[in-house]
Length: 155
Image 1 (spheres, rainbow, N blue to C red):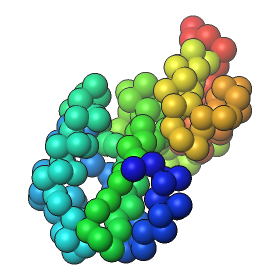
Image 2: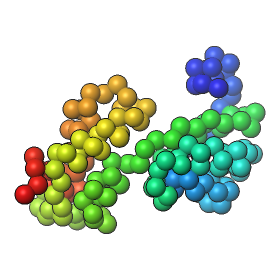
Image 3: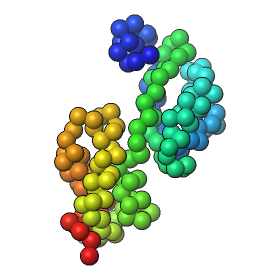
């Protein structure tokens, strides 16, 4: 059922649940089990559907999930791509950002890296209608706050 149909049928919403689940590894254990169990949602249905939707990602990739639980014990969910910070850390090959952003540079990336991340993030529902240039500017800002320098080309 699409979100438009849900609005038109006015199903009462029990909760909106946000989770981060590793790609292809949803199981009825935490964080999935306790989050969905309290609303009496079918855990195995969620796990099978989530794992099918995320099978193209590397295992352990943290996927953001926005799940809407309805009072009739049904649900629907949206899987978003991993966070920009996760992509930046992977591209830069670092574990964490700078403790002193603006003063200490922990890594350097090229605009090509930023462009590739922006193309991936543009598939997210909230970035779909944003121009690629705007998505790139946002990613560059995030990189700066992490202490990652962005150059036109790497030396």
